[in-house]
Length: 104
Image (cartoon, rainbow, N blue to C red; front, side, top):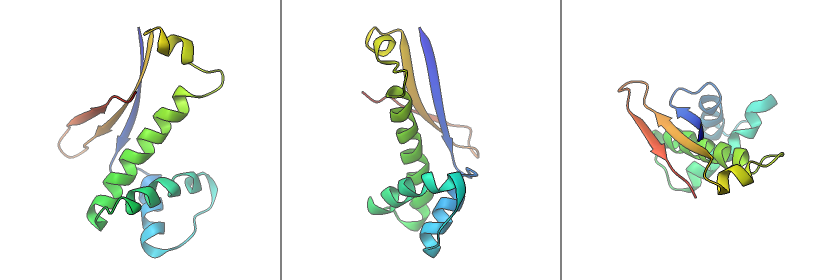
């Protein structure tokens, strides 16, 4: 069995600028632009400003897990055979707690 963990955490150097861009209604350039939709999704889920970043971290982690599961070459056969798991996590830097998100 192989396990791929996709970590997410607060103070993420990609999600923080995206959240700031959402709050200030500004545009970012480069690879960070790919994170902005996840921040907007978190905002659309009615996340409070304090919860915006946590929602964006979790949404970004979920999107990354989905991309890995459907990437080319696809890991579909090992996933279906139970030989590979791709699991999202959210690590709390302050408390050291790790939440695991098993998605089907």
